Image (cartoon, rainbow, N blue to C red):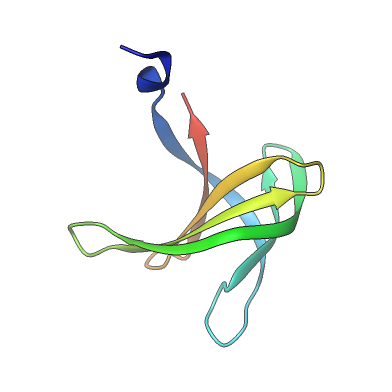
Length: 87
């Protein structure tokens, strides 16, 4: 088994400042992970995800001003934000 197969993904709750255009929470501008705020300088991708139960999420692949790349997830039903973490 390769080392990458041992990595599991979890979604950690975060606080996000987002631009809200014609649809709510249209694009993340900054987010807080732990006690650190990260400013989003680039959004690489925006996608939708739907579970078999019908729950919908918006996914954003972003780069912060310090060059770090994160995947953020917005839960439409609960209006909550999460960041992908590896455990």
